[in-house]
Length: 629
Image (cartoon, rainbow, N blue to C red; front, top):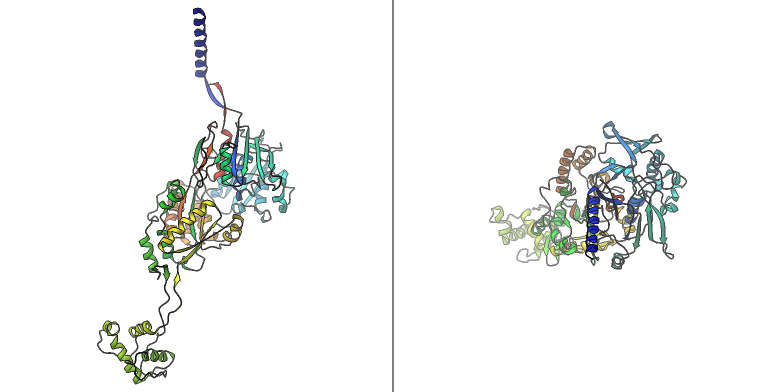
């Protein structure tokens, strides 16, 4: 028995020694295998780069199925994808791109310059009604050879390489579909791309036709073969349905909402940073009080953003005070940030003639203006008649009470008595002790006070805040309404479903104040949001803001590639916009994304939009293997 025990110990020790030696001379690396199931709110409609921007779910899946000439890595670095190399010429107006050899579409067809030219031309054709057409207006693309293309820009545009992350379409499939039928094609749900994954199964609801589940498998032809072999996406109509699915363990990964009942947390949470902000945009083209600088400044000064963030987000959002996000892009903070100061807000409103009453902030009726002319002996007309009527109301002043419209001696004597009765207000300021009988400015003021008729009615300061229907935006709007109404400003909330909101409110600039969000991009380009040329659809200048100096800075920023000069321009732009108060900048929230702990290789970083969380998804892994060092 002793020998047996010793032999067992010797064998175990040998095994452990060999294992330790094996681990010393080998390393663990990711291996192909494993799968992931993700839950999303919404339903895919267009797995097509032409239309995906309008739907979060479409945008997410397109990121996995298609590729562009360039891509962002899992660390946020912009690198070539389908491009081999790029040459910039003509001071930034020409981009010549050489394509990678041997790239194939998921159906095995070769990728070429024809696909690049076809995709851009289709987007630029108004008949396609592409949601990204605005990004490609004024860009000319030319095929130089089967594997070389050249982009020509009207003006230099420093962030243009980011535009080349546009997912590309296979010309050999889509060229046979007419422009009118592009949105109706079956390829919108059975896409063919060059990305790391391909669609292998689509399950639709038998009654509604809505897609309930899509399965992706690794693409054997891709340049970036993924480790995870299969991705399954399940789609739910509401956030609450998704939360229940998480509780039932139907899904493993999902975006964590910033509102509503908390989701069960079992995995690893990654907080991605988005270059975006939410703000209230003041429509400067609307008629009314919002046009006044002091009113907009008062609206900004009467909002406590820390209160908003605590009450709506439980403190999990960050305050935003600038249109260019200084903390994110490493520029100086504003010199005069928006600060909560209700006393200042009231003072600014008073400068515009508003007064605070028990019923709120109102604009009083215009002062009476019945008496406007200088009246003396010999004057005639309707104003003299009104003067005589006013004086005759007090027999002690105008006993005769004659109303003739002629300013005679009796009327003059009555005016003298009137002036001496109110001597402290009429005569004293002029250094007089006796009445003159002439109806001058101070006499007219007192006459208007006593006998003048009010011009108009009391007008409350009432403004409308519009926003697209969304549970979170509704809570934010209600919080803003409560804070403004505490000051005395009446607020009307107006919301509508997203399709109606986009068509009837956003595109038509049919709002007074708008609660909305904007994304600047990884390389910030505020041009679409603040340049005067972008005040109408499809531009995104939601305040319909015009400032020639801001236009100049925005144009210079697009052409400047030097990092330090860009920062200087952004800082100057920031101060210029804030001084005009075209918007109230409020908050931003991180994009929180949960994955099961089994999934490794994920890196949270700055992303252009939520779909970019899949940048580098081909490097996510579950399985591992050991190889020699």
